[in-house]
Amino acid sequence: MAKAKKNYKVKDIKLAAEGRKKIEWAESRMPVMMALREKYKKTKPLKGFRIAGCLHVTKETAVLVETLAAAGADVSWSGCNPLSTNDEVAAALAAKGTSIYAWHGMNVKEFYWAIERTLDFKPNLTLDDGADLIFTIHNKHKKLMPDILGGTEETTTGVHRLRAMADAGELKYPVIAVNDAETKWDFDNVYGTGQSTLDGILRATSILLAGKNVVVAGYGHCGKGVADRAKGLGANTIVTEVKPTAALKATLEGHEVMTMDQAAKVGDVFITATGVKDVIREKHFQMMKDGAVVCNTGHYDCEINIPELEKIKKSKRTIRANNEEYIIKKNGRRVYLLAQGRLVNLAAAEGHPSEVMDMSFANQFLSQLRLAELAKKGKRLDTSVHDIPVEQDQEIAALKLRTMNYRIDRLTKEQKEYMDDYSAGT
Image (cartoon, rainbow, N blue to C red):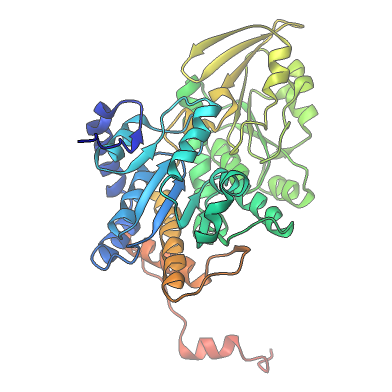
């Protein structure tokens, strides 16, 4: 009798028990997701759908994966970053039957091999964070595309690239921009990134942030969250920007604004959050103070030009986990690079808190459900990048408020009529 093929590859399956504890902790902090699981586990609206997922393997992601499965979906998963997988959580998912290919410390070849394995069962839905899965399908597995009903995308960088792909006429199936939901963008990106980024920095360095000059490159939702949290811990916050309105907002929030050339000379801690490459380059490393800490919280590891840092180093050594000391050849100063320039909040910490991912992953779940329900009716969204419905945003926010025991007011009939009454004057 042939031996059954193992449908996972993780660091160590023996880590499953510890991973299960982490998942159970996340479940206790994600009431919206658990309510959705309870609602749909009997009707199983995702039965018959095969979802390939490429998203950070954290305890919160495990709650999403197992909620999709509870609703009837067949799921195959990989991590969307080589350093963001929690090996205990990956083992716990594998032990319970999830097809998963992910471990911490993958090289680039292994990373894409894992994505390829999630496509072996020929998915008809995709779920992405950064769009590497979608790009792999479009570039290498075009034969799969006619059967793919749609996908969802979790993060700013991925949505931006998919919109560019759609504008160029290269996107071949519809994608829902989960990132652009108000209950994702204004919560996960701001409060989640802000807290988890500083968590990663502190775990990798144990430095005191109060009194430090903390430079945040980019003042979008993520950068704003990081700068505001750093300021709350007593740091002197500096923002660098290319967009005038974003820079102006930063000044009115009490942050100092300057160019990176100026900030490089005075910063103690540098955090990139732009989604653009080469934000910190060779000339900036040469200007930095002795002991400067440099890290990234954007999706890709190109915001800090590490090849240029390597080129000007005299020596390099690992000081502690996720913390590498570079001594600059020209001046002997020390620069500390965290998490190899990858997302410091996931590589050096655990990612966003469960409470905020509760809403983001509720949007993922409901968006997958939306694609499936359309398919059952013989319909599909047109081939472009779609926003989630406003009603879904409000439904998730209302449910979250109820789980937190908050109540809000409602408009009266007269108030609703007044809002639409264009004849009402002063």
